[in-house]
Length: 546
Image (tube, rainbow, N blue to C red):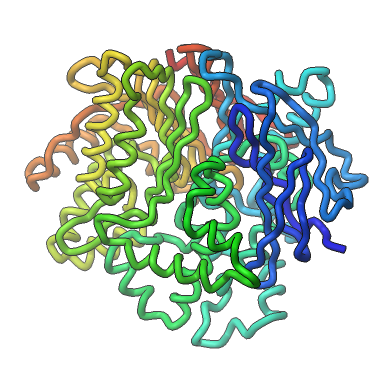
């Protein structure tokens, strides 16, 4: 009999449809609320996406999962509330929406010292509170968030736990010089990482009941992934890298990307159709696709991992800022022209279309502390002129954010200004980000007033740390005198002035955190909460955005 290995994960939800993702131990048929789907096989693992259709808009239903007719979810004795499936309301109903977001979640470990240093998981604490709220109400829809946005580093393929180290030693020799050592090597090891990250009681229930949008960042693959062409050349010289990058992107496609897509888009995907039609294991199909996706980095066109969710009159665009890069001798772009054009088209409402809030999910922040932004642009300028020191500094201290791709930074600034200045401008344009292991909120101002309020909202980490000295570095990065001095240096180097200014309205805050962006019609506010020393969450800020 097949067993439920991982999941269920509630992924894309529409007004009448919902997608449930699962991993099972054997081939079987997965059933949810009368809908069913067969599993497909990847490297001996089995997966399915069940699309429940014909639902009522705005409904909220508890659900179960059956494998070949046998009940496998809810888990017996788990002590959690039911998992709920809540559909969207019709677009005319603006209503109240809550987007929970964060990034950089190191998994639970069995090492007491490591656990103490990492602190309490903010998402676990959020899940515990949400369970209590669900159990205390007769109307679960009133307390459930509308979406959970995981903005990168869902797994750490290059910084594994002691438990995973022991598991790797049981299956291969990490001292073999032809392998990656104590890093993830293949699809099976990636499957282990996802299981380690998503099977603790709190996270598993949360993912089963809140629609979750995901995008990768570097540690889902490797630190500094696609920072520069020099980085790619260095990795290409390692004998184990081709297998690693194929496994990374193949597993991302299975565990994260498929569930991001609405049913119509997923069904139109030629690769997904081939996977469903295949007889037997489909890893070769996925590895070939992943190899091509990686090879197309540096080209003006390539695989588009970015996607769009519409929730009432709020639009979420999750942006791939890692695998759509152009890193050749002539161009250095955060996002290739093909993908950026798609973002521009989808960020701009069609004629007669009302969008109250535009959310851009980018794993790495668009707006860093201003002084840090100038440093990143100066480093890019120096590296482009052949400075090996600039390249070493770029990789050593992670100078790889939007300002380090200045042409793309400016293009995004133009896009945001255009959307925020139009006659049908949304009330807010918010860039949601993670990566930098601290949290802050900053407001943007262009030389000419805009109709929309514009913000960078950064929340990181969910559970991880930051070296103590970086707290001083990030605080220093907001100092006006230092920013002005670096701006003069950049101007002298021929780097154009920044197209806008921005200043903090909250933060920086350090520690494990989760944020909630709440909109109600054209009003919006953000709440930032940190995990406390005794468990639970402590609010550090609640800021009106309109």
